[in-house]
Length: 147
Image 1 (tube, rainbow, N blue to C red):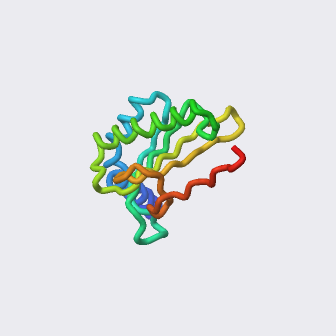
Image 2: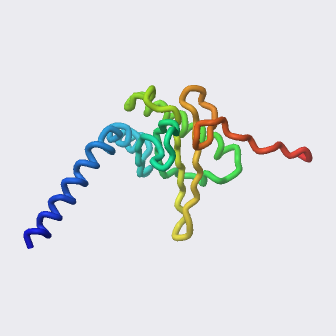
Image 3: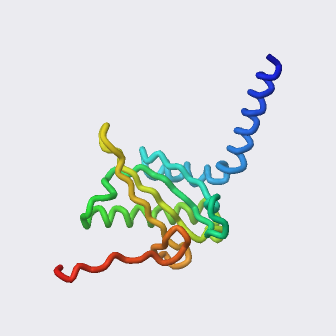
């Protein structure tokens, strides 16, 4: 019984330590996003991808949006850009962006009881150009010559 009680206290302590060291630095930004975008359910974290050493530092924001981010319309593209710019402004106010190289934003839109439509955009904080997971400029899809 004492061993189980000790295990419970240890697990709780480790969870508290993880919360304070890994997630608390981003809490002001997360709260600012939640206040600015109602019902967005934001989650913010930062750092390197653990499995790949030498990768760029990234600030990751996961946020629910009121539009389908996969829709191929001018309205969706404009909405996505507006959200990206506002998220960057909030990030500049609440996080020291000089510590990061990439802003990675995951937009998701839950379709009622069916699926979740998600789009990920990575931008270099230095140039605001789209980049891949390793911080290299993203390859643009080839233009359709028939268009």
